[in-house]
Amino acid sequence: MTLEGDALAIARAGIRAVDPVRALRATLSVQGSTLRVGKERFPLGRTGHVWIFAWGKAAVGMARAAEEILGDRVAGGLVAYRKGSPPYRGGRLEALPGSHPIPGDDSRRAAERMLQRVREPAPTDAILYLVSGGGSAILEAPAPGIPFRDLRVLHEHLVGSRLPIQAINAVRKHVSAVKGGRLAAEARARVQVSLAISDVVGDDPATISSGPTVPDPTTYRDAYEALEEAGELGGVPGSVREHLRSGMRGLRPETPKPRDPRLQGSRFLVIASNRHALEGAQREALRRGYRTRILSSTVTGETREVAGVHGSILREMVMFGRPLSPPACLLSGGETTVTLHGRGKGGRNQEFALAAIPAIEGLPEALLMSVGTDGIDGPTDAAGGWVNGESAEGARRKRLSVTDALRNNASYGFLEKLGGLIRLGPTGTNVMDLHILLAGTRARRSVQFSPVEGGGSGAR
Figure 1 (cartoon, rainbow, N blue to C red):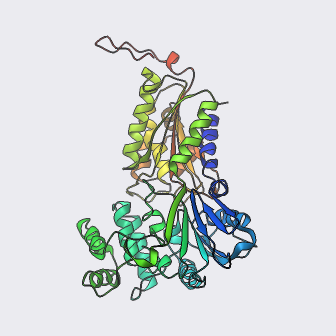
Figure 2 (figure 1 turned 45 degrees about the horizontal axis):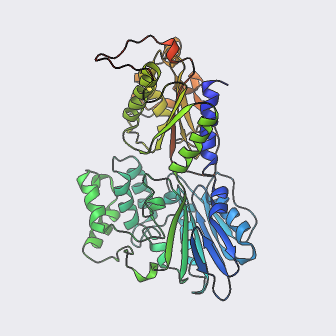
């Protein structure tokens, strides 16, 4: 097996570890008249009815698994799935598509319909919310007074801004009819349980899918000041600015806060995250004979800078056996940020691989792979990319420039010409990205190095 084959198998194992069906089966069951969710128990009430509302990239798989587990107790509900992915068919649930990464009219229809449907369950019924990445766009409707076209412009602006995700979500929640706890606040059911596949660093329930079912600790002022301090107000439609200002003056209702009585019966549980994916990848790497360590599941920052650091760590591992002696595998995960400079085609995982090329140039038996766990990297058909110590020379032979490709954010075409694209197709889950650094068996034997000054040695 080649390093590329090993890395791909390790990535696939990580993705399998966060399969929504597997995660739900391990978490959810019915025992008599009791709903078991993890370690908690919830009475199902007189009717024993459970309603299912699912949205996001993993909505279809999660909904099907929940229906299988709950059987005849499912009274109804709605699945809002990513447009273009395999749709939900059959079963007791209504299904509507929604657009991603920018909400479309179908996203609005799905959100408005879900706001209607969550009012149907009786107080004695139970609601199961199934939340996954991509939901911020797939399920979206504007707050009163904001035209939907302006909400779309805002989403496009936020995606291209340098605002941190916490600030972006503060803004989204205060211009939306469903986010920031507003969806769950419409329901009458006293038992409301959210099961989430996390696509955010830190797994904050209020950030995953912009928190439609949990209290929102942020305010209109937080949202407005985040835009103002980052110099982003100029790109925000006037209706949005006026809406936020009205909220700051107390003329708009705030999002539900932590002590809101409407959400007192609500529970939230993360059933799959980047940490789980890394642990699954680690098990596969160990099985394949690699010394293995997880560096972090909370990697953030500018993509090309983070990639350069990862490449330097791989060089250290190959040349000096630190932090692990080859054959070795280092793993990390999270979500980096690409600052757009050009009009090229690519995604953050492809740019991650591209930006690492200079740091690993010439290294024998060294490979870096970066993969989006949802199987979709940016607006492309690739999940990510891989490069090795020979990629720089291969690029020169094909008259490709790493510098030019980075300047134009043109990682897709660059990696395609090198044969470094990874295509997995939609995986049905999403827990951000996996970065895999491999140093093969012959790596250190192929590199000559001297003991470190001061009597230390790179050997281990």
